[in-house]
Length: 258
Length: 345
Ligand SMILES: Nc1ncnc2c1ncn2[C@@H]1O[C@H](COP(=O)(O)OP(=O)(O)OP(=O)(O)O)[C@@H](O)[C@H]1O
Ligand SMILES: [Mg+2]
Image (cartoon, rainbow over all chains, first blue to last red; front, side, top):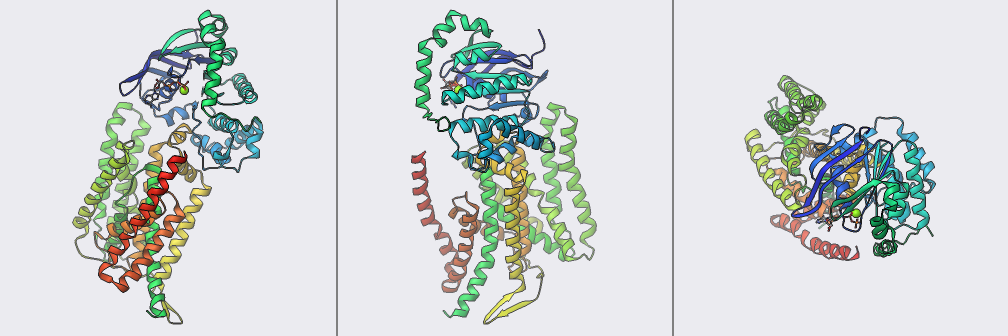
């Protein structure tokens, strides 16, 4: 087995006394897409925040052969670990252009940032059109593009995506997944957290199923897709309905898609 | 009241108001980035003025000792982390900024203080002594509790204010100082006599505000500070360190404070405890801006300056009362408005 780029071993996270993630282990091999699927409240976001250093955790987190548990979030970003958060966490009152520029803050002395900005604009022409506009005025799909673009400006080696399809119209979701595939082809490793299990497993090399804070199942994505337990809970009709309900719940009307 | 008197009061009010506006800007900046209501902001002003006065008198300013002590303290605060991480570069950095640089500044001032030096040199030395106190104070007092609730941070600020004004008494004595004006010129326009120093205050404040605007609007560091103020988590995910942002905002606040002290010292007698009242009036201005808006904060502070000036003419015994009473309707209005905002979200 090749050395993992990211390796979490027996990671636990608690909010006060509520234990949201319990002894979860996972690995991401270089150049692969790994998906974590799970229902509402399974602990997916909590896990990613812990891996990123936004939440304190117990257990081991190794990235690129280094124990990163002592490192601050900013240091992890500088080492090539990036997260597109579930809530996007954009700088609402700042321009699209500035949001992107700040994504490359840790590479501020690197003259290549201008070329990278250009590349992001190539990838997301809509962001170029709106580069002077405030981030808070963007539609849901545009926000997701901006969050993704900002993360790319950091030149991540491992990109973690927390429900990139959340609340987006199917067309945009398709676009986002196309970009994920493209990034993988460019050598970026990806840890994808999704409720949209079908799409997430289709794109992934390896998958994990998180249930109430613990890993219930793992395996190569092709096998998971056909695992009866996964099919029944996450790929069946029930899973889809649940997802639709959720999308509405988040007020996910997508102006970009219309 | 005659027109002449009104003009004079306006001029006086604007001069003080400009200084309050600078205080208000620093307060808004520090609060936006770190959530700290920086009660001791005015102390930088007093320390700046008092340090300059010492240098002018050819005396060794007491600020030297404070700078060295704070540097050592900050290094000691860094030490456990450095021992745990065993990173040579981090250790070197900490030793440089907390020990070597303060020592170098202190040595420089020690040598130059008793010499006859030109005014710009004295001002430069004053800045070199007082400005580093900002980031050092952040390191020692706020960085360890950066995630604490606003109220806890406020309590620390109040404690820090008492500590700093006590130290001010110890380091500079109880006597008030007034430094030599930048220029003795005065200009007459009709009945109005404008002193050269007032013009210096106006011009320098405007220039400083313009520089701050450019810094926040054009430079990557300025944008990074704004980003931290807008979305702390987003900033961290973009690789902007909260510690960096905190230190940078305190560096700016200290610079603004010293700058104001140097400007106002020729006009007003500054005592070791003058800073608090000046800072508080800046705070009233900042509150008028809701502690968020820079232009509103500056406008509010100018209003405070004018109000104070006119109040001192009509009822000089009550001028402070009148100024601070102003805050009540503003707070009421703000609390109503904030309530409304929350409902909208
Ligand atoms: N700030 C918090 N304080 C207390 N409990 C929390 C907090 N955030 C999340 N939780 C709890 O932790 C558990 C895991 O939440 P988490 O957000 O990680 O789930 P998730 O898998 O990302 O869900 P979703 O699909 O809805 O995004 C939930 O039971 C949730 O109620
Ligand atoms: Mg989540």
